[in-house]
Image 1 (tube, helix red, strand yellow):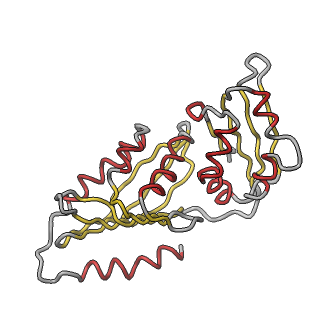
Image 2 (cartoon, rainbow, N blue to C red):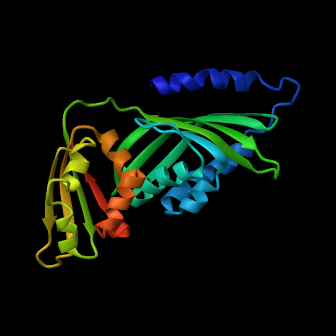
Length: 240
């Protein structure tokens, strides 16, 4: 919530900037914005990234601000890999000269179940090529932070179950990595019928820290080293 307050003066500035320029048609950005959830739901991270400027700032919840397309790809690519789909609903959009902004709501789902709802603010810029792109993107959840632990089920296939299991053994195993990032208790499972079908039941005390780790370079590298087939990953949230 505090992060949203940071961007409000920016909205006021945009509303009052370039007083000599006529107000533009909001459809200049809303028509482009409609491509965002289409691209996410299609699993097309290239199409998502194409909607942002090269130096776009992303202010995701419970994470440091990132600058550039690498951060855009890591964050929203992580959502795609986790099997999330989204729907954006615009509330207000304005354009003045080569700058615009859009305010709206979002809903994220996994496996047909809604897992998060929240709000967002985007600022848009028209490039020298005449194309409108997002230059700043901030979003956060409507749901209160819970101090109670939650349980998460992750199911995936791996290249070699023995190699994957070995990564979870020893003093410096994946258990430590997860414990250092909001998940102190992780139980490992493998299928009898298909040994390379594996899973985790995780007791999560800090969902934001765990998500940030999974989407980080360290988390992605760990999954690659362990032979996790990312296109098979399914994440199930505890039913309420």
